[in-house]
Image 1: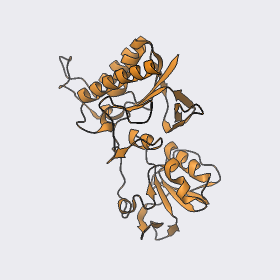
Image 2: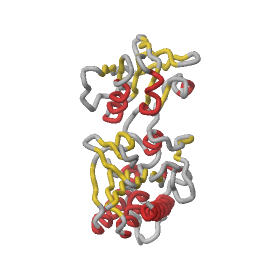
Image 3: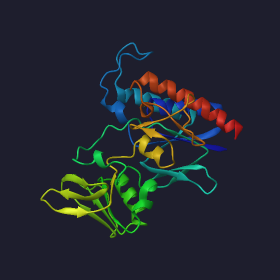
Length: 288
């Protein structure tokens, strides 16, 4: 049986899961780290089928329950990366394991957490990066920093540690929520600035100390769909994954739906795109 992996249990992910499960073409696994943006929706009253307003959490609960009734498998975990298996199938990498996929849907929503550090945006593409797998090569034998405090930051740091001279995680004043190996350093001070000329030269911390480095990798919170898409070469512009009419990304077997593709951040739009992605993924599996 083919394997379909869906990252995200919101309206887009569940919609796709329903179509895939009912097709019988694949075993469907949804990997989710919580309710997501729906948790902040106190009342939804512009969505078809509800006589009274429904909370985002209740809508999410009903969606997940319906998918489970059909046999969709759910895994509660955090996806920290995407890569390829030896047979060139996609694979979702989580804190606790790997999930190879013949088709994979990114539906974790849009990035909503940002960091306002002087000099950061100005140095994007000149030493500031959002993908360790993509850009570690450019910092071989050099000192780099990772901004973040959780599992996602640790994953990026471990990737960089394979080739860089040193890796320092900068929590920017937040508490570290994961254990670090001995070869990964950590500084908890607030970041005052990212310093660059033509390229990144260092980071200045609260208190005035400057850490010299050639690369600053941003890995705050959890990896959103855009960050994951970049790791396997999908095109991301202004934080939005670029997709075709059938929600495919141009990377064989990889699809995206919901807030991560841009446009209106509405439930009905996410459900529609999830359905389109699910149908396209079924067609892909049939041809494969």
